[in-house]
Structures are given as structure tokens and as C-alpha cells.
Length: 256
Length: 249
Image (cartoon, rainbow over all chains, first blue to last red):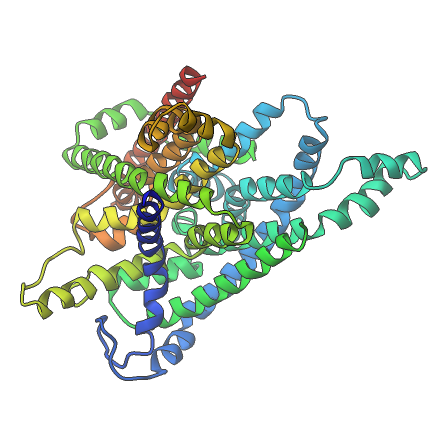
């Protein structure tokens, strides 16, 4: 009885959380030019429209570049930190963890505005540099947490064993720890990539000079008008996300 | 990382030598006050609704026996976080819009139509969807590290399910809950996409006001003042939460 009530509430929560994710799929094939439900007819026109809009294509390219490079850099920067947290050799580990909480709580728009002033006013750099810095910053906590979670599944003894058997510290890390952490690193990369690829607020003020990331382009489009082209694009993005999340889950699941 | 924070904050300060006058002007500004009270109201409602949804969900997931099914349930709940917030706001437009699901059901029942999209209610729907996964996962992680025998002991000693929940589960998960709550409230104070798409231009929240100052009015002095006020609000929420967590120990 009690279990049934819990299940119903769980189902309501799932519905609440997942309905908006999957609804765009249902109307992306609808032949009506307004956003209306239930869908009527069948057409692939919106997919064609969405995939041929210049803003979306350029935005997709920019988002892809930023997300790939920001995730790679953030992972490279976080690996030493999470490694020493795992080995418990890092002094002030509490403070380090607090620092990694900052990007989650500092308002992205405030940070984006600050970066905008810093990059353009003080250094006169291109918006690409600002975007890259901002995105590295916001994905760092996810990089650190995922790496740390992945590393903590590994028995610290194996590294010591390698060292005892005569390997140098560096060699033990490269040949023993890294191969074991490979899946964790890949799945951390996927998380970081998705967070960065989807980030809106941080990019809002940094998308100047005609270049905007895909989410910002979508937002500008959607504020101006309602068009089912967005639902086609959403369908593509949701499929893309599910594929990546499944790969990431599989990589982590294979570990256990 | 710290360099990025300090650099951006430094440039926020550096741009306006007369920061105090700008802040004073902002604090007495009518649109700022209405945005602040709207944002506060929305985030409190979102926190409440999200709490009501999260606790049962986390408890249910924690009670699933098979570890495989539990992982599927967790990924279902976590999946939306990985999906673009614009896609999700767009999904809500389909549900709540003029010709959306709710209105087509209402008109099929001959009850007329309701205007939900572009109201604060729509923002609440969207923000609850945006942040509930964080609360669920932080309650779940405290629950799953909780010793199952404690619950059994409470039941054996004669406490009912509800009593066990109140006296054992809530105190022991309060740390995770408070952390999740901080993420939600801080998130509501700073979210932009969801309020602008679901609330419409007439119902400004703090972040929408910031966007207007920077990109429409080009009034960077006011924008800096507003940024600092938003930062101060979020930091004080964090401090209050930390004190609450300390008090719990």
C-alpha cells in the first residue's frame, strides 16, 4: 500500500521531468505550421528547415569546437587535482573541494558578464577566448567529480605494487592507473561535453560579433517566433544526448 | 579557475568607480524591486514543489531491490539534466501554450482556454523540472549511505512508517537535502533561459533584468551593481545553508 503511493509519486515525478524532453519529438513531424497538440499529418520539412538555417549550422560548429576543447582542457586540469584527492596527498583538500563548488553556485550570467568586461575591455581578445575560458570554468566541477568517482573505484594498491616492482611513479601512473581509469575519463568527457554544449547563460554575453553558440542561436530564434523547426532541431539534440548518455552509462557499467 | 573568478570579479569592480551610487539607485529602482520579489516568490514555490516531488522519488528509488532497475530509475531522473534547457522550455511551451496539450484538453471538455504560458505559473513548472533532479540525487545519495538497520530498528521499536520518516529519515538526510535546496534556490535566482521563454518579457526576473541592462539599455554601471547584488544573494544563501548544516551535526 505505502509502496504503491511512493510508486505513483515517482511516476508523477518522472512524467514531470521527462514529458518536456520527449514532447518536441511528437510534433516535429506534424505538418501544421503552428505549435499545436495533438500533431496532424506527417512531414520532414521542419528537419530540412532546421538543418539548413545558417545560424544553426554556424552555431553547431562553434558549440562543437568550444565543447570539445573546453572539456579536454578541463579534464587535463582536473586530473592532477582528483588524482591527489584520491591518493589523499593534497593539502587543504576541503578547500579544494569548495573551490570546485564555486562554478555551480556562482551565477553563470554574472560570470559571463565579468568575463565579457575582462576579455574585451582589458585585454581586447576575441569572443572565442572568453567563451572557451567560461566553458572550461563551468565544466570543471563535473570533470573533477566524475574523475574522482572513477578513480575511487580503483584499488590504490595496484599503483604501489607497480612501484614496488620497480616502475617509476610516472610510469606507474601512465601504465597502471590511466588504463584502469580510461572508461571513467571517457564518461567524464561525455558529461563535460554535454554540459558545455548545452550551456546558455554563460555564453549569452560572450556571443558577440555575429558568432553565437547553438543554444544562444536557438534562444534568439525562439524569443522572436514560434516555429516547428525548433522541434525538429530539439528532436535531433535529444537523440544525440540520449546516445551519448547511453555510451557513458555503458562505459561506467562495464567497470563493475 | 580561481584566476577566472578573481579576474571577472575584479573587472566588475574596476568598471565603475561610483559603484555605491549605482547600487543605491538600483536598490530604490521600482523594476528591480518587483523583479526581486517575483524571483523570491518563484524560488520559494519551486523549492516547496520540488521537495514534495523529490523525497518520495528518492525513497522509492532507494527501495528498489534490483541494482540494475535502480540504475535505470536513476538515469531516467538524471537524463533531463543532460538535455538542453531550451529544448525542455520548448517542451513546456507545447504543454502550456495557447494551442498546447492542457488547452486542447480543456477545450475538448468545453471548459474554454486558460492562459498559463507567459505567467509565473509557467516559470514554476519549468524551473521545477530544471532543478528537481539535483534535489533527488542529493537526497538519494544521503539515503543510500544510510544504514538500513536504523530504519528497521525504528520500525521494530514500534514507529509507524510516517513516524520513521519524520524522526529518522528526515534528520539523517537533512545534509543532502539542504545542499540540494541551495542548488535549487541559487539556480532559481540566476536561471535565464526558462523564465525568459516561459514567463515572457513582461514578467522580469533578476536575471532577465541583468540581460536588459547589459544588452538592451547598455547601462553597464547598473548591470555591474545588479551582478554584485545577485552574487551577494547567492553567497548569503550558501552561508545560511552551511550554518544550517553545521547546526544539524
